[in-house]
Amino acid sequence: MDCVFCKIVTGEIPSKKLYEDEKVIAFYDIAPAAPVHFLVIPKVHELTGASDITEENSGIVAHIFAVIARLAREQGIESYRVVTNCGEQAGQTVRHLHFHVLAGGTLGAMA
Ligand code: 5GP
Ligand code: ZN
Image 1 (tube, rainbow, N blue to C red):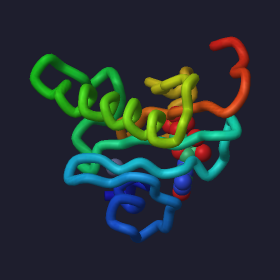
Image 2 (cartoon, rainbow, N blue to C red; image 1 turned 90 degrees about the horizontal axis):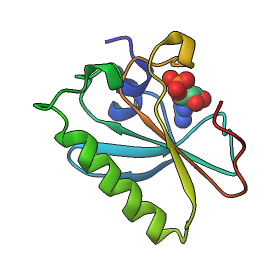
Image 3 (tube, helix red, strand yellow; image 1 turned 180 degrees about the vertical axis):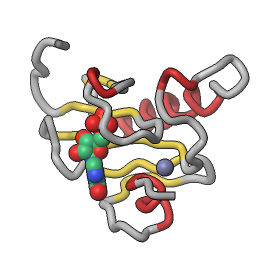
C-alpha cells in the first residue's frame, strides 16, 4: 500500500508519536500549521476520508475524538480545533482518514 500514513503506522516512515493504542496512533504533523499540530489516524487503511464514514464504521471516529479529548487534557490544552479535510479541493493530500488537532494560540478563521 503506497500510503504515507500506513508507512507511519508500520514505522517505515519515522514520526514523532504522542499516542498509540490497538486502533489508532497520534503523531505530530511534519509541517505544523499552528504551535501545536498533531494528527490522529486509524491504524487500518479502511476509510480514505470523512466521506467514507457510515453508521456501521463510525465507532473509530468516536474513539478518535475520545483520544483527542484525553490527549488535550493531559497536555493542558484547553482550546483546540479538530479538522478533517475531505477531498482535493478541501486540501486533502493523504487519502487515509485523519483528524488534525490544532492548538497553541489564537487560531484564525476557518476558511
Ligand atoms: P491533509 O492535507 O490530507 O488534510 O493532511 C495531511 C497532513 O499530513 C499534512 O498536514 C502534512 O503536513 C502531513 N504529512 C504528510 N506527510 C507526512 C509525514 O511523512 N510525516 C508527518 N508527520 N506528517 C506528514
Ligand atoms: Zn493508509
